[in-house]
Length: 84
Image (cartoon, rainbow, N blue to C red; front, side, top):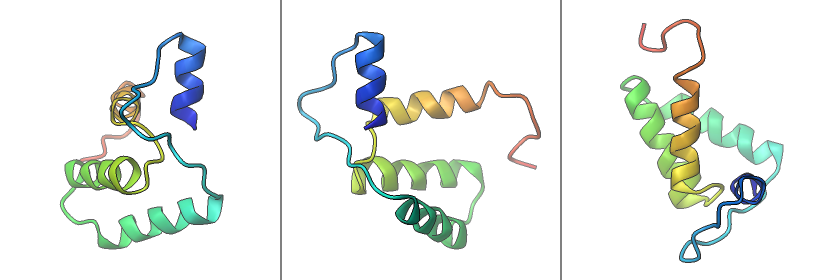
């Protein structure tokens, strides 16, 4: 849903070949992050790849380009390095 709202606000059209993202509750979001936190090994590259697979491919909560834009935006935020 977020990708759809962002596209409408920015004037971009959404890709017609992809299904619309689904809205889910906070409980499901917490379960997904708990699962990813428990089973993800290998550092930030692995975490990001697993999140992209889970959120874009399996659950269709967002679009691939929107996910990648968000990951790129988080790289601009100052703070401790995730790799340490």
